[in-house]
Image (tube, rainbow, N blue to C red; front, top):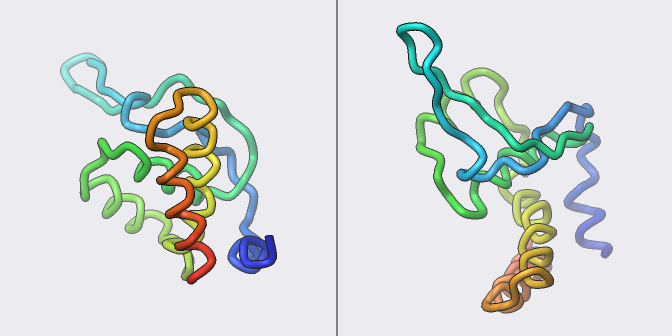
Length: 117
């Protein structure tokens, strides 16, 4: 808990976040003659905007163009890579409860990574 508190002591400005921004909740739709990106099935709340970016790494599905575009609009603060593991641990533990499988081993590895950071 001490290490997690330390990693999450950056005091982010609250942002409206999607809350479940994995690759299965994005797509494209036609808007007249254009095809535009869309996100759907939100679980919105106000929190650290890093949670959404972190979630995109859990199951993949986002290209480097997404991350480059995000960084060009609103760069992530220093330390976001370390906080990503903390934020994603919640999702991995949740998947262990819901689905079982290898998620427990993944969570244990993430906990070790957090303790070493």
